[in-house]
Image (cartoon, rainbow, N blue to C red; front, side, top):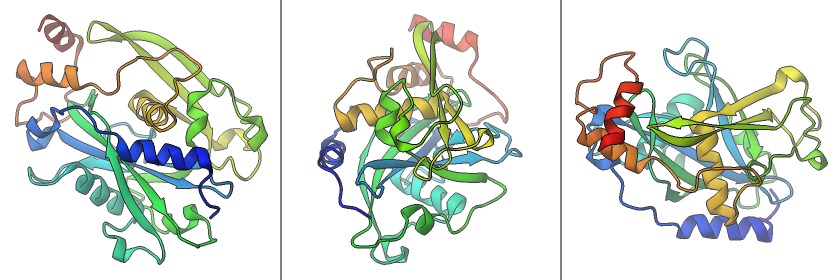
Length: 282
């Protein structure tokens, strides 16, 4: 791995120094808590990339969607980062402890973002971490992708973090996907305007152009999380329209106050327009 570029080093420093506002996540029942691992590493040019997975088509929720490694909390004592690391072990074989990583790799937990509200009635806490590679010259992706759980993950890939601040594809990196890199539109989220983002990401834009079947669409909550991570890391707004706030702490707090987040979760239950109307009045 090349040393971090100056821009990347400053980005990591900003994430390390970031302190999120108080969160509703710790007040939710354990059945409503989830966390994901936003794992960053440096490519051969010292620029930051982010690890992403393609969910298996057989899953009951978000089947075939691009997401981060992660899942639901096991108990009330489990912290977001422990939940995210445990789920990453189950999904992509990433060890929970640094001592089990191939030497000299180490993972540093940089920060947590404000929690997001999933339509599946979960509060999702993104945990941002950085993979330190020391003097290892092998590919970080090769080191971290030895085992996938086929029942949960169909593929794993990475994308350059700073690209998510632009609405234009970065042709200089050979990432001509043949698809429009960015699409976005304004929708309604709990009676307020919310921006929906979609990015078309090649599985590996370091290795030249990608064929059409190698394109993965990153959208919804995952796209928001990547965008917000990039905004914080580079202290820069994107070139396209976006929401100024990060996360859904206000929505989660109102849903909790309204009684929507009960301990018992009905399988397949989703947040509806009626729930949004009730929350909007609080």
